[in-house]
Amino acid sequence: MPRCMEIINEELQKNLNKVILVKLRNGAEVRGVLVGYDQHLNLILTNTEEINPRGGFKSGLMVIRGDTILFISPSQA
Image (cartoon, rainbow, N blue to C red; front, side, top):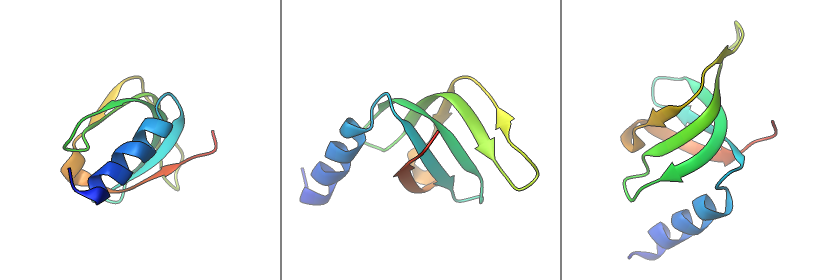
């Protein structure tokens, strides 16, 4: 496994069952609890909330396809 993927895996592992912020290529931002991911960086989040200037949209379970992600960051709930 390339070193960059090892670092990404370590960081995601540290943030399992914690709130993260995900920015998507379409400009949307989603905050939720990371419960799983795979080698393609597909993410499974629970207790999700889409964040936008007009207010948030709360949802339950969300699967985010890895190739739509711009960045992932730890987040304050």
